[in-house]
Image (cartoon, rainbow, N blue to C red; front, side):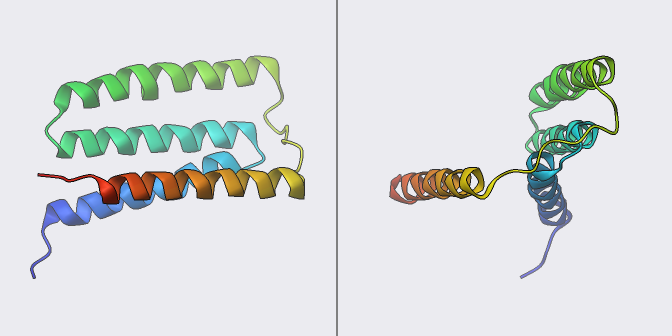
Length: 118
């Protein structure tokens, strides 16, 4: 089986989205979280371009990556210090968050596997 450039780009965008999504919600620095979110949104636009959804990709870049992330970064810079860190997450909150994420993943996977795709 031959690997195409589209498959390599899809794997690259998917890896970027997965890694930076996890980093967005696990980092304790608020400005880094906004930057990681920007990278996730730009990579999502890259996936839209690969699917030939140019309008959706343009909306993703201008509205989300361009507008909302800039708004978030400016609000962070105006209301808090750049070096400010989030409080550490307690084990109880981490446990229930992991439980909710696993339940959501199971629900999504079973729904996808039970659907009859054409």
